[in-house]
Length: 588
Image (tube, rainbow, N blue to C red; front, side):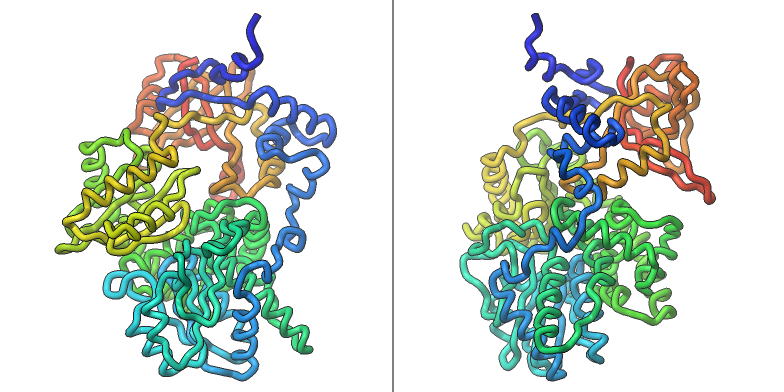
């Protein structure tokens, strides 16, 4: 007799090693039972119930989950330390028409945070001074000369998406009040500021540690509006600002759970109205001709905004998101589009060199890293993400310039990279370093590079990094091609948005024959499968041509395959069709 645990542990469809080298793992028995109970109680389609069961959603909570209301999920802003003085100071400066400056980071989260404050202050007739540091000349976060200069001409300086570790720089802002609105991991002591609002301060509970900086700014504005109402004044409409919060949440790889999910869900609805001049221009420049989804925020709009801070003028993204002039917006969007193309070329060269170096060093340990002379500091973070994706290991990529190396790091789920980097910095092996769970930045002396990476690897190994081989491929259930309809896609979309911490459902389709396989674009693979019962499934594997899976499907010889991937509605020349993003396949 076969034990239940043995059945649960069996590879899905018997795929122990796919063409992608993955073992397919399906839902366990308990999850299958929960999905069946959901289907019986709610009447929802079985694939939807499988997804809800995986998220641990009970029948009575299903409808609320699929229609998340911000009012039900929004935390009390005052649950964050220093929120009361921060919001009160912002309101006082606004009503007294004081001179306000915003010092922001050069990434999407920083740009969105700055644009949120700009948009909130605009109805009061106030335009804050925007200061975004140059990535190469000034580096990340506040610096003493810039803060001293801002303090000479302003009464209030708001540091957004930065500032928590900037003790000396904030001390230089003599004569002005400084408020920090951040989310990066804090140190043992706080910088000299009127208020430091940060869910990742060491004296916080960590319950809101998943918020990006723009979300922290939004909560500050919620409390500011409450204070205004108490004084008999109405504040600006905050719902209209959720497109910025959504963009920052996805681009900063924050988990799409809890209130973050509501931020993105409602922010996408706001964005679809095309009311923000800068985002509309950017979408047009990127030739985005459909209503945006979370994917577009992370892989279409976000990289273009980041391009300014990576290889161009650091303030381009924040200026684009803040402008209401369509001509200025079009010019900024076009400039960012060109910078993004240039960024791709630079990234490709660094990526190839970093992958070669990392493979030569070995990719089986708890940390994968590479360092190169003259590697552009604006692309090392993207390349670190590519290394992480390729190896399922935390990754660090460093650009060396003389005796100094500046790098970025990206982590995998379950490994707190920011804490490890901060500890190595505290031990003196890094000149500086910090970040959050999934991403970090660091500066290292060339002479200590090897020892710093060895120590970082040791700390990451203690958290379990590198303990396994290639990731299992989690499959949510089994479908036949005839079930892959637009109605099913619409029902699944109600469980979104999908992204970090909330992956889109992945389904397996068994025993299919290849009807047609061809290359599209540059290196992409488009395959149409048939099931022998009159059903067909259109699929696309981006970058999949030059892979073992691509080779097998292109030279199939009549063989049959199990395939797995994520369903989506594809829009081409105004026509909609269902296709699957093909992620893996195995001989049937």
